[in-house]
Image (tube, rainbow, N blue to C red; front, side, top):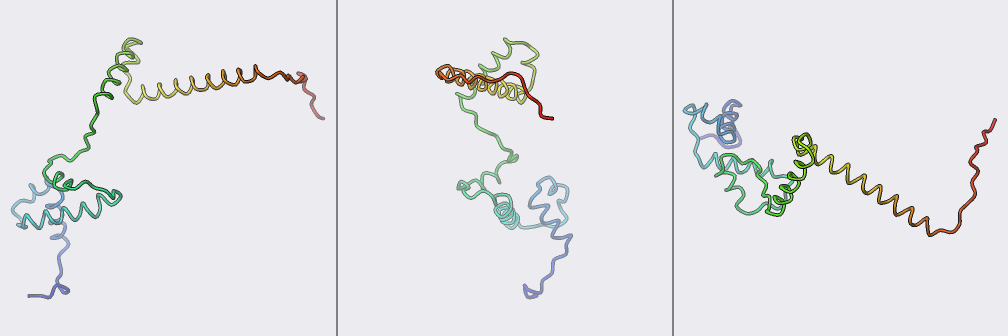
Amino acid sequence: PTPLAAAAVHASSLLHFMAEALVPAAADDLAGTIAYEPELLADFRSAFRASLAYKAIGNLKPGSEALLETTDDPAFEPFIDAHSRALEERREAAMQQEGASEAAAGRHERLFLDAKAREKREAEERVRADSERMAACTFRPAINSTRVESP
């Protein structure tokens, strides 16, 4: 047996091992070439995910790694609560009443239009509040409306 320090692994073997451990579809294509222990593949997959995929996340829930291994498609699926669903249904019903062209727009377009309308309302509210504050002021300066230009 060779000492561990002097052991060498060929690059193609390492790539094959990584492909089989990390990409399930590639494992089917490479089946039968080299047989690796399932525990070794699972350990490598776990170590790889822990060191790279979750580096920015400090507080993983216990058992999330096991959940990812059992899931065929570990895609993100957000949970939308009943209140948020009801809000969206009301918003969609209101959009359909306003017109079919706006209802056909994508959600991103509706959110953009809602934000623009909210900004407009807030600006109008600021102008109204400023004019109310100015109505309480008794001092009105006399300002010349003509402008004198310098030579």
